[in-house]
Structures are given as C-alpha cells and as structure tokens.
Image 1 (tube, rainbow, N blue to C red):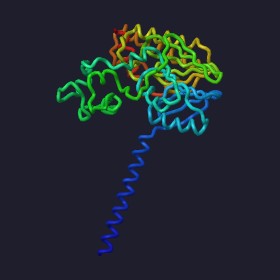
Image 2: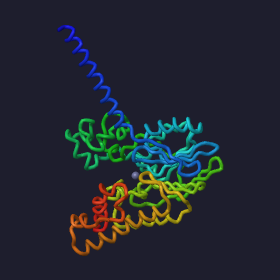
Image 3: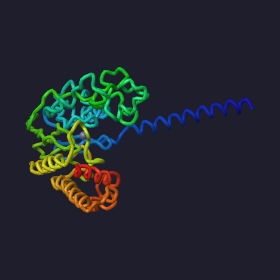
Image 4: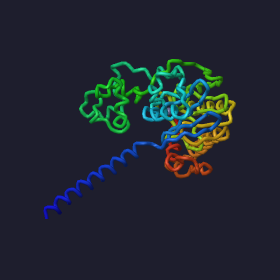
Length: 349
Ligand SMILES: [Zn+2]
C-alpha cells in the first residue's frame, strides 16, 4: 500500500509537472505570433509579426528598415538580420507614430537613425500634466482619483498598461492616457515636411507625406527606388478590407472631408513609380491592388449615400451592402459591417 501510495503521489506529481509544462508551452505558443521573412524584390524583404508586417532593404552599407513594430519582434528581427546578413540597421523609417507599428526601435538605437514625418513629434509629445482622463478611461476610474491604477484598467488600457505608463509609476494619468500606448516608440531624430530621400549603399528610399487624412496626420509612404516598391500602413491595405469603422480616432477631426483627403492620398500613391506594393497588413500586391482598395471605398460610399437618400436605417444598410466582389479579402466577414457603419457616420456628418 505504502509503495503504491508513494508511486501514486509520484505519478500525480509527474502528471502535474507535465500538465504545467504543456500549459506553459501553450501559453508561450499563444504569445509568440507567426513570424517570417520573405524576399519581395531584389534585396527587399517583408518581415511578419502575426498580422503586422514591415519591410527592409539590405544594401552594401547596412539595412534600411521601416516600422520596428514592437520590442519583442525587433529583438527577433535583429537576431535574424545579424545571422542572415551580418549588417546593422542604419535607418528606421516610420510609416506613422501608432504604437502597434512604431514601437521597439530602441533595439536598433545603437546603429540607426530614426526618420519620420515632423508631425510625429507632436503625436509623441506628452500633453500637459493637468490633462484629464479621456471619457473612456474616466469610466474605469472607480475610486475617482483622476488616474487609472492597474486594477481599474481594462480593455486597451489594461492590456497595454505599461506602454501607457510613461514614467513607470504604476498609474496612468490623464496625460498618459490621452497620449497613447507610446512608451516604446523612439522619437525620430530626423524629420521632414513634404518629401525626404534617404540614401545608403547606393540605394534611395523616399518618405512621402500623405497630407493630413483619415488615419493620422503623420503618415508617410515609404517608396523604394530599386527595386521599385512602396510600403503603406493602415490607410491602404492590399487584399484586406479597411479596419473596423474605417478610422482610428486620434485627436483628429473627422468627417466626409477626411474621406476626400483619404481618397486623394490613395490617388497620389497610385501615381508613384513602383511595381511592388506591400502594407503593414494584408497581402503583397501591385498598383492594381492599391486602386482596388480605393474602389472599395468609393463603391461603399456610393451605396451608403444611396441608402441614406432612400431613408434606410444603418441596420438595413449593413444587411444589404454586401460588397460581394471583395468577399475574398481578409477581414471581409469580420469588418464589412463595421465599415458600413464608419462610412455612414462620415456621410451623415
Ligand atoms: Zn495606425
């Protein structure tokens, strides 16, 4: 009996250890997004972190990288770049300041210069200390002290608490909540207003300002001269419907005027010289995919405008505006209905 008892205990302990190991492995697997590096033009590569992508160009004098995405990804990427190319990253060219694309640059800080549109500096600046919590955060402030403790923070504030908490004092104050989850974003040391060309190892890469439009006011198109390619993030997705209600609300004035400036920026992107187009999300394509994305927005605008004129409710529009030619695009099932709402909100303003 005794032996049986001890062996049973051992077996149970062993079983628990195995279970713990499997659970840890599963948790690890869930945290680790799918990562890959694919060559999309000569010496031009697309790197993946789950649903997020960036690009980099390898030259004889080092690497020109676009968005660093986040610290974990950048650490992984740096190891890959060291192993594959043995070259340092000399430039980090930001598409825009948003936390889920621009974080992680400190991994390359020793060797790289950081470049972005001049409005990035304003977006990264900390608002004044007396800034109140924005309405969504104020709703979580159950002890009413004007700031969020970790125990109060839920949703995005809870998930990215440490990236909001710029001074690492364990609370998110009004200024930090208003600014965003931007702690891991290294500010650009080199900024530009309209266009800027960066050259390295005989290769040129251009940053082109899109103008103030729907997604943010600090958006750059990254255009590689050789091979001819553009990298565009969030405001154009290739083979993927727009995100949720079309806009990220980031201290931006919204309205149908923003839709016009968005469409004009896409037209500008269509006029540039390149063969390969890739985005921060979606597939790798060409200019026809950029045009198709504009057509999606234009067709949806037309159909929503007609439905409004007919007196349809939002729910009726969401049921009837199916955008069927785009049904094979990524996120069609999840986001089309919200796209209709975003378009409706814009057109009734
Ligand atoms: Zn964004």
